[in-house]
Image (cartoon, rainbow, N blue to C red; front, top):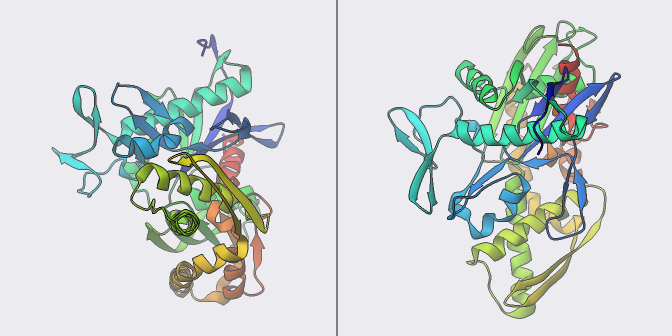
Length: 389
């Protein structure tokens, strides 16, 4: 990418997700999302989503985004994801090493083991998002230097400061670190009325289910100004990835039934099935049936099966039963279901029709906001806030 010659006055919004990240801007009072092209072994497609993945290879190459995600099956231990949650943390976790109170993630490269700090991985992701924005907005002629970044509501002060510090290393001055549910509400203008109505934000992402009940005193101009949080409930390691994995196992079962070959222990094969299952699940939000084809899937054999929405809903039954508990818990904390006036659906897994139906069953008669694509609602709200800077 050619080096930009001047600084842009545009403030970008970055929806920093565990699974995918997105960038938006406010232009002429309209939110525009930054798009990138990806081929991924198929026809080139335009997308607003950049996988929040960073990969290190044995020959010291570093991949970010889609390039990192698609090679995951062949380079699993060196492919980092969900690393955002470790920013600003100094605690033990089975995924990481701890030295002198600082968290590291171990990867293997040509010279041996390398310890990568979470902020290094986040910095590389932010640099990629920044470069994509610069190319989209000015063809790379102007540097983007200012941003608003979204994070989970559960991020503490140390983690929010770590986001600012890491963004600074990536060449971005962060004006506000905004909580995801606040941004989601702003996307629908729910902060403008200042009515004090309680809003339940149902944030069902790739790795976490987060529920937040909040209200607004008036239009949000700062990260938390005028925001009242009444109740929260979070289920970590309980996101859409579990649905993807259920579909993956089902597809492996179909392949074994057809060919007699069990690929369940083959990491690259299962990773390909998971990627295709994820794409199929996205398509099934608007279609009732999809065709899944993988050329040269395993030992020269082609994978070709159909997947229906009804089948996926059966696979989801055990998971959906568990979703009801955190909904009930957050409602109890907030004073009960009658206290809720509006519901906002956020993040990709909340697009799934059966999930939407479940929320409607629990919160009968509430205004459920889902006109804005749930994948994009957080970054769109952040872009509105960036326009208020």
